[in-house]
Every structure is written in structure tokens, then in C-alpha cells.
Image 1 (spheres, rainbow, N blue to C red):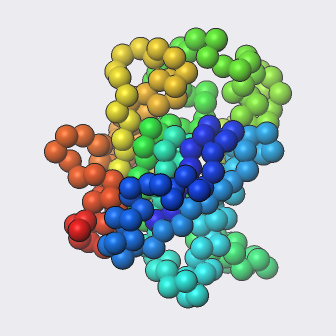
Image 2: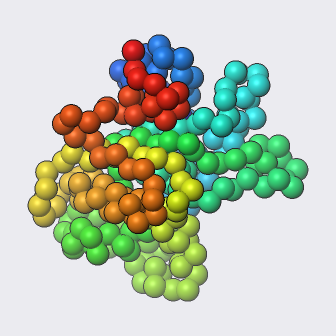
Image 3: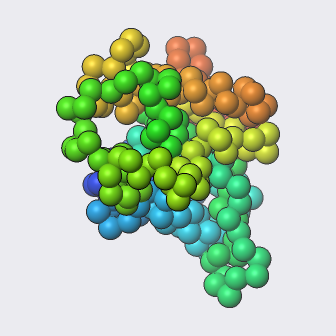
Length: 245
């Protein structure tokens, strides 16, 4: 299981996972765990940050023999930005390049399971209003924050032809297909119109959009809730075919 930290792609650190209650449960059930860092938005656009995470997955696969990892059973787990990144890794077509001179890039970027806590449904931010409704302009750092997410300059840049492949690359909903890994989604915030930035970024509607796309593609999607397995039980069921101890 690869832990990916949150923080809006502006902060956070992999060391937070040392305090996670999920870590000892996974280790106690024989599951290896790793935690990764990635560049932040000030240093790289989202489309490159996602590739940072993909390379981390590939790097871990190059160490499978040395570190006793089963490269056919990798999962991602994270909250907010870490959740969205895990979803992207689980759905994005494989980036492996068998002809690359770099042995890391020859490895698969695909995951076999993903746990998404307080996730976003897509990093094509131009799609959000269609399922969340309009946001309050005061919630954003500037009118151009969405464009700056991709290291464009102003909001109108998102309407230009050169933005289309970037938005597609970051659109997890459009990547979901029948070959994808099962996902566990937990967005348990309040329903109704978004009340603030945090609510907008983690609204339960993000989870429903993922569920809807997974159902259409025939991909297993488990929404968290009372009486349902928790995240670790879900992961063990996928990775080991068993229950948590």
C-alpha cells in the first residue's frame, strides 16, 4: 500500500503516515507499506505532480525483488490530494514505456486498488461546476487559481486548444474504464450546497460522480458508510482475499 499525503498540493509530508492507525493494521496483516512525497504547485503543475506519483510507483516496482514486494498487488491510499492522486493512478492508462533507457520508466504505473478519503472526482477543474454548482469567488486565492493549477496564467487560458490535452490528462472521471482497479471512497461531509472552500473540494458529490462513472464502466466502487467494510478491510479483501485481523 502506497500512502499519498494530502495538503492541496501546496503542503504536507509523507511522515504524517507514521501516525496512521491504518499502518500497524496493514503491517500486522502482512502488507508492506510505503509513503511518498511529490512536488508542490509552486514548483510544478498538477499534470507533472501526478507523474511524480506515477514514477514513485514505478520506482517501488523496480525494488520488488530487493524489498520483497509483489509488484502485481499495489494499492494507493490517501486523503484529499492524496486521494485524487490515488484515483488518477488507479484509472490512468499505463504509462510504462518498455523501450525506455530508464529502467524505472519501464515499470507499470497501474494500481490494483485505491482508497480515497475526502477525494476530488477529477482534476479537470472546469467540470466541477457541472456537478457541484457554482462556487463563491471568495473561496479562491485569485480569479486565475484554476488556470494556475496547470501553470497557465489567466482563466481564459483554459478555453484555448492547448489546454484540452492537459485537462484530459488530469480528468480521472474520463479515464475510468472496465480494466480499472476497485476503489473505496469516503466523502462523508455534509450534503447540500457547498458552504465554503473545504466543503466544495471534498463534497460528497465528488464520491457520487466516481461511483456513477465506475458503475457505467463496470468497475467496483464501494462508498463508505455504516455497516460497510472499512478501508483496511477493503484493501485486505482486494490484495489478500481475506479479512483484517
